[in-house]
Length: 118
Image 1 (cartoon, rainbow, N blue to C red):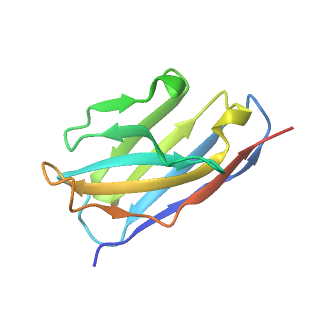
Image 2 (tube, helix red, strand yellow; image 1 turned 90 degrees about the vertical axis):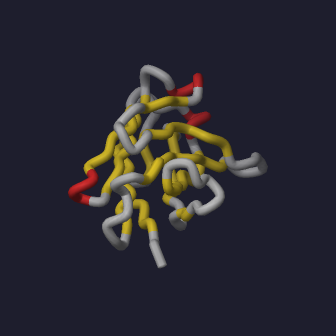
Image 3 (cartoon, rainbow, N blue to C red; image 1 turned 180 degrees about the vertical axis):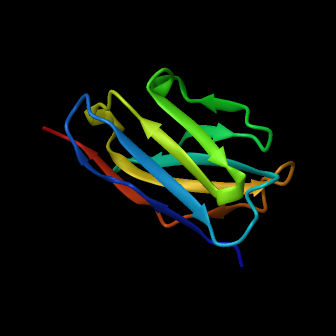
């Protein structure tokens, strides 16, 4: 069974940067749509960024210009570079992947905590 593992979370001051990684257990990322979601305390999980199998990216409005999603299929890894972090970015960040055109066949990572605080 495919597994996704996130890493790179932590505590950072407002205005700082973090880089999250998500690595798949087997060579499945090639051909998969990969994305990042987040869930803050007391709130529903929300979409952050997505990157298609071909490398096209899209973002939720609140992170555009600050976050960058990227992928390396040879390394079975995607990243989320987060710059100019704000306290409202504090959440557990989850990686999600699914075969292109089959969003119901998705897999999720266990999440990594990002805390933005002075």
